[in-house]
Image (cartoon, rainbow, N blue to C red; front, side):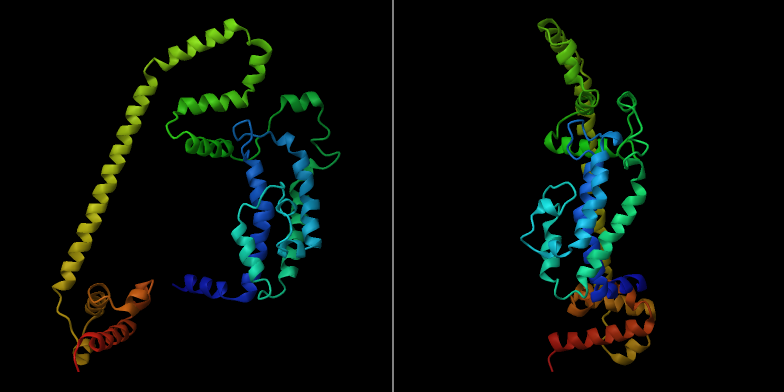
Length: 327
């Protein structure tokens, strides 16, 4: 495949590796922490943030990028604290990236210049994309009452923060139902705890809430949900098993077909074969004889031309004779 070949050549090029290193550093230092923050990042409100509450974060983007653009050596110094390298001051989300780049820093040409260019570009980009967060900007012109009444999603996708929160909750409580998650999310989003403290903290209200919760837990809705979930898991397991059995059966049939195909070792006869017949011979050496060279070829489509296939089969025959045929 020409595209994959070009990508591989690029990945082996030191200049390309330098650019990728700079992009990777920017991602770990700025992009990933920013998206974690924008998606709620473990916030108490269930992965939901109000964009109007993110002014300080957005105003910190340009000076943070400028600091690292001015001092790229901070990024390559293993003694630099994580809190000085990430936008939110939290530990690096991928220490492996920094470890490898620092190990190879001397091999990558003009790495500091690439880092400087990357973060300088970040300064220019964030200057454009955070215009509404600047001093005396649209958000600053809102009154306190207007900010209280307005809520703007932290991301363009209404579900993005919720989905991330759901994933975390599912890992912490695998048996939790959708109703359970919904109740927890609403509890945080609607600031129910503050409401309870202000208006419903009497013993009578607590007793009433407990009784209502018991009624809902005993109505059988969760039981049916769990039955449906179990049936779905069983169905998926059966489908996966059937698919695996089908694949094994097809593999066995292909192997039987190869075993029934005569093996041709003579060069004159090989020269007379069609592409389809040569392909069958190649598969015999690959699948049956386990030729190491053919096995190592990741994409057999590179042998789609008859001349290439013939050359590969002849070479495989030669290796087979050296390994198994007595002189």
